[in-house]
Image (cartoon, rainbow, N blue to C red; front, side, top):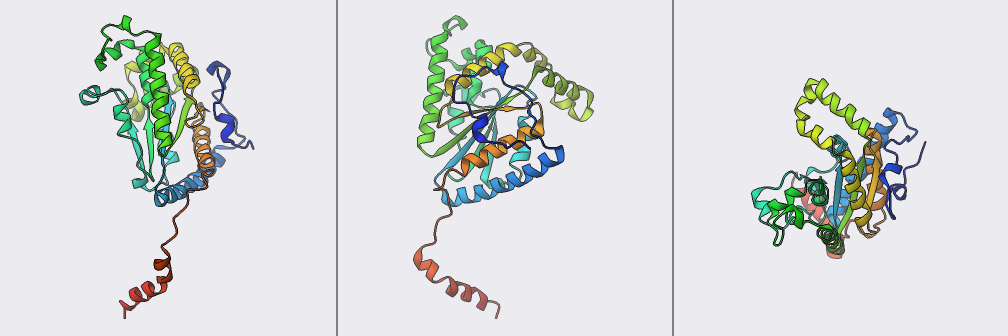
Length: 294
């Protein structure tokens, strides 16, 4: 049975996605994967209770991946044992009219986790160097000074975006947000099979969009953009983890295990001690409550 170690998936140097496997054999049956995930997510739920009581950190979990990479089901399964008030999921779609009146990071700033809570970004601020780089015409809708045509969007523009994203993550990290960024690394063939299932299974039809096939034709370009984004923005305070995603159950366990291992390293996150005066009077408080039944 292969041991899951956070450092095995954390990106610390330059990577080529084409050289990283999309399928991992953890040496576990589906039943074993399910049972181990149950244990890990229960421990994560308990950690969130302590995180809330401690009240000094928030945790930001960022999920990126091609269509069908399993983001929705991973969120459902990994965070199932959390107090519902302790985790908030944000699915970022096409920017609204209000969001376009602000800079591209605004909607992500206001969705950051409060101290003591988890925020999960299902698609993230990285869409602004992924889908917009594949479709640079989308940038024109942001009404940025000096950007009047697609021809105005040069490499310097993208370099500035990467710098801004790195600055954003550095700022929130220094102010108590623990950042985890996961790229669900899916093979093109596995995506084809999952899209086919959406068409073949009636209960899955609603998930399919003809746009999925249009974007699939741009697979190689998306891979280039993901690779560049990961290489330019994986930092010690905001690391990227590349998760083989062809096996959904293995991917869920991997993400959950990485989170638990990394979060346990924060030894200062513990439940606060009661005030000494309150602690000294616990028996008196207990006696007062017990008297109410007499």
